[in-house]
Image 1 (cartoon, rainbow, N blue to C red):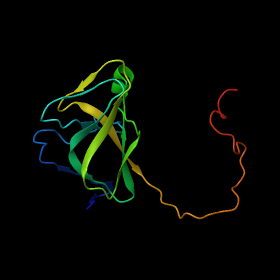
Image 2: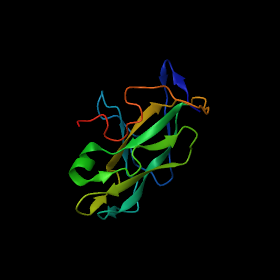
Image 3: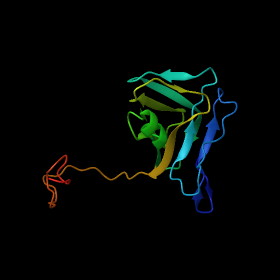
Image 4: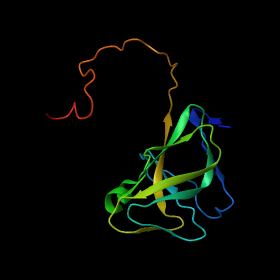
Amino acid sequence: MARKLGEMEILGFKRLPDNKDLPLPTYETEGAAGMDLRACLPGGAVTIDPGGIALIPIGFAVELPAGTEMQIRPRSGLATKHGLLIPNSPGTVDADYRGPVQVGILNAGQGAYTINHGDRVAQAVIAPILRPRIVEVTALSTTNRGDKGFGSTGLT
């Protein structure tokens, strides 16, 4: 159950049996929006070939505050230097999920990449979720853009 400390939400991480040594996910700097998630691979490293996808456990389950989600995003350095991406980016962990958190990683780079136990593999951002009432309508309001789709707001 999410608990409050003053006005700040408390985010609960439960250590899973295979995770004997990893630190809790942390914000690396004061202004960081995302907390780093580490690979929990006590049985050995995982190598992802170019074009391959691996599901990497982080060694924790999480209890999110009601009305939030955990967005799992690529780490910018791994993405730009090695082509490691989150294929469903951002991945979503729902507030009612209590199972192991895992990160899907796609190697879009040129060479194989090895992930070791404890490597920082992704970042997680906690975000509010809106759940509006869904209704069917016969018309939508008009805007200047209208129904112009992909690329319509860029340079012509």
